[in-house]
Image (cartoon, rainbow, N blue to C red; front, side, top):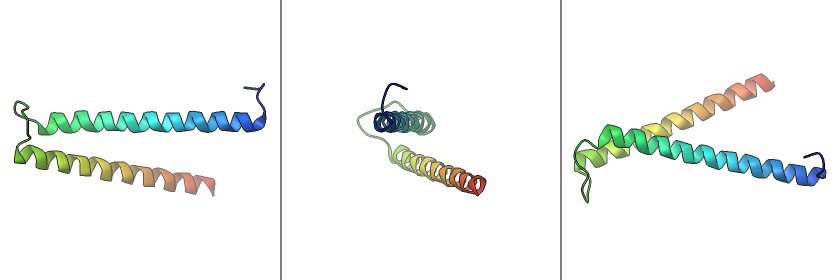
Length: 84
């Protein structure tokens, strides 16, 4: 990377960070899908979810997102405290 000028290095770093963020989002979606499916889908899949399965999936996704947001906020708070 030393052979690139500073602007190109910044652009490449930004691109890599964006790709890493996208990979983390994709991994979270995969984890969410797998976890909620295993927890909520108890019968044989058909063309529609049962009312209980649908409710379970919605609650599972909500809790996963709530927990993820909570963790991100806590990590940001710790970063801020360490930076001061």
